[in-house]
Image (cartoon, rainbow, N blue to C red; front, top):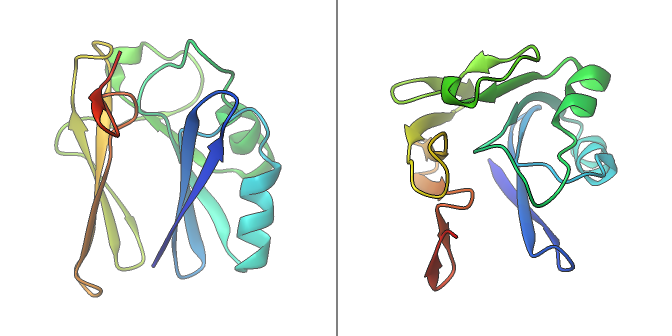
Length: 142
């Protein structure tokens, strides 16, 4: 299992790839999908999921482009009211990538439809949380 952060300094925006074996999920992708494609190619992985922690008003996400070009499924909270093809991803919902489980946690605050993603990899005894804009390093979401 591997977690890779992609950081856009100009926007102060972090996105992530979670790779488990040959499957990969992208969390909160930025506008340019190429870095995620390059990372997937470098690790012989297939992007199977794109997760949006909330609708982003401060940048344009490439979630629709990634889904269209890779056949990945988009996951987001039902509270977003998304009208594009997606699967609802809310409290209690799980997504499995190899030995990794991604659990949805509704975390309203930054926005009423915000979710955080709890990553559990029992094989590697690894845990992580992707909080979107609910928490920042040294601060809470705005």
